Length: 113
Image 1: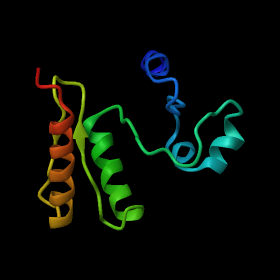
Image 2 (image 1 turned 120 degrees about the horizontal axis):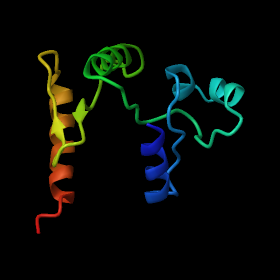
Image 3 (image 1 turned 90 degrees about the vertical axis):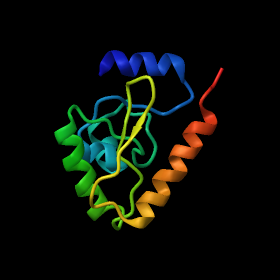
Image 4 (image 1 turned 30 degrees about the vertical axis):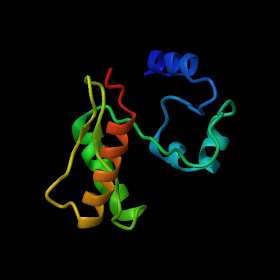
């Protein structure tokens, strides 16, 4: 993760990124500022990277119910030649529409040359 953070910082120096954080620090600027003097992230993190599919599923479902009022876009698996957009059996019509919009935007941005 540290190497990935360093590479990301070199490739996109204008994007705020603190690297590895505990969940409470990622989602609370107050916690982060108290615990991490050198933080550069403002506000709440808007992207959380999990170490495994199991931890990602747990976090996704907790955040869906506690922070997003049941409205989500995702999950999206990255790291392959193309992203994988996942719809689970509990997907609502709104999530299907949101995910479809994301897929269309991804396809429009993909370089087809």
